[in-house]
Picture 1 (cartoon, rainbow, N blue to C red):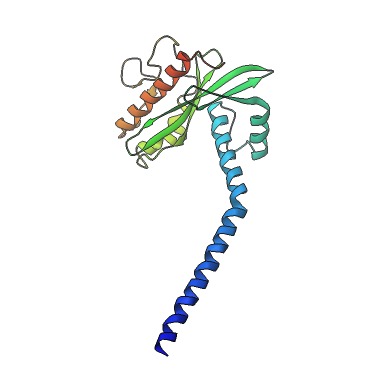
Picture 2 (cartoon, rainbow, N blue to C red):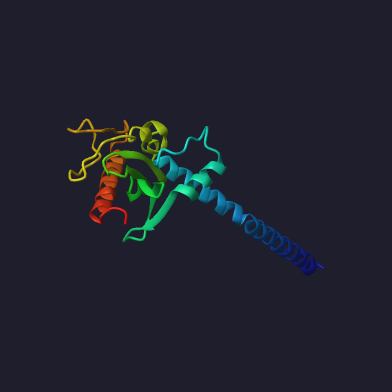
Length: 202
């Protein structure tokens, strides 16, 4: 009798676990397409933000997809990373160039935008970062990102981004996050350099 009383709970828990796993697998599978669509939409928003073509208060999801499908092309650099090209009437208007590197607490991945003459920055966006919230994590906040818009660069004069108060500084570093600001400055400069050395978009 004692053996039976021990067996039933085990069987019951096994059945419950199996049913739970099946339900979770079904939910995961049935929502996968939606999650992929949401991830793609978020990435498109970020790229359009780099091009200064996205306003979270005015640009609808429909408009994001429409602009992206009609005006944005892609190509791959020699590292296998995607470069996004904003086109108008078949002519390139701007490029979204990838950059990446180590931050203080993990990898930072983002895109920096250049207009077609490669002389002005259109914007910057971060796809991945795990810097300290309220300090280095502020690189993902609008006040930091917006100061990149319209910054003039010289194609033959790296570094292109220089944190103030260094001579020639054009970007305000984040107070209390000097290391993160320096990491971002260096990886953006390396990203632009790599793009220009490869001859820009083909």
